[in-house]
Length: 100
Image 1 (cartoon, rainbow, N blue to C red):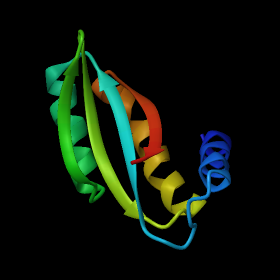
Image 2 (cartoon, rainbow, N blue to C red):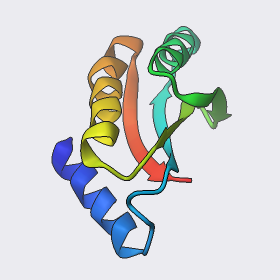
Image 3 (cartoon, one colour):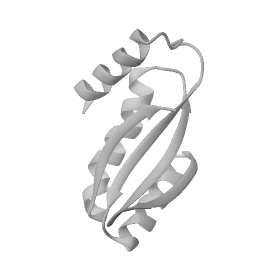
Image 4 (cartoon, one colour):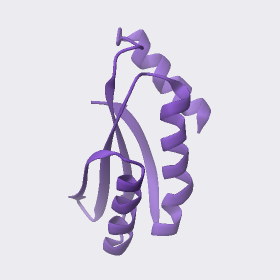
């Protein structure tokens, strides 16, 4: 997970985003379970992510939330790691994060 986060962060920095400015990081988890999506949305809210929502896409439910942070690996990785490690309990899969 940390290697993926480091790679994505480096790509974003290479694109010219300022590391010390606060940015919106969009995290996404996908699940086929409505109950799982609700549980994941609760986890997103517990992690103090903003704009938490569930979006239906085909047969899947994507749970989305925005982290407000500077482009610092530890802060982003902490949230990504928690989401990735807890998603399977809700029959979900952490799809990753991107800058929004």
